[in-house]
Length: 226
Image 1 (tube, rainbow, N blue to C red):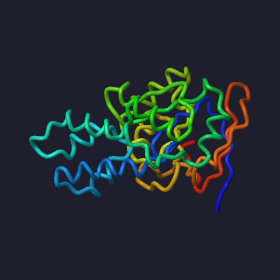
Image 2 (cartoon, helix red, strand yellow; image 1 turned 30 degrees about the horizontal axis):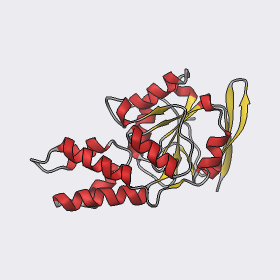
Image 3 (cartoon, helix red, strand yellow; image 1 turned 120 degrees about the vertical axis):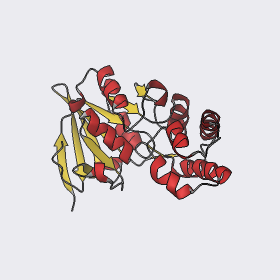
Image 4 (cartoon, rainbow, N blue to C red; image 1 turned 45 degrees about the vertical axis):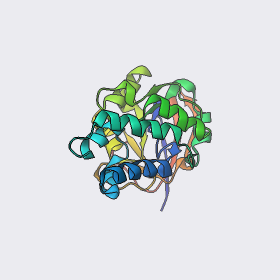
């Protein structure tokens, strides 16, 4: 059963991969190559890599003796070059086009160059404000990126709704005390109590009202956090 909920946030903060951009095929290709090179279990890596910075995943899985910095640089370079199969998440172009430019940001575990490549490949506008992996000292699930975005937009974290699809990002939103909406099928512990939308076609914006956005969500789960 679906329900409609109308909200009035002051800003929207988006994760990129899996939320605005469907890069699943590229992400899987990249980590499977990494796993083959080092004799690792690709499925285990993929189960935890989503939503985290590349270097943190490399550090967590690279065998002893592997130069983690060099391996991270190699993976990032591969991802920047590989945009085959990248598409926009349904509804993302329409939602971003409807938003005032000073009311949204992208907060991603991808680097700045990779973000530009993937957003462009998906036919999406570059964000007016980007907090990338290059701009934080700690990646998700640290709240650093979401706190920085809220501050840059001059809104309280609690007045900004986060759109996420991965456990690490949802944990980051919770730590920032920003309400979160789950995009897609993720059902980890951090998704409990959050509104869930199938994709961004279920999110519409009807301008602003008294400084707040008029946001309508068609969702499948109620929540006590928003």
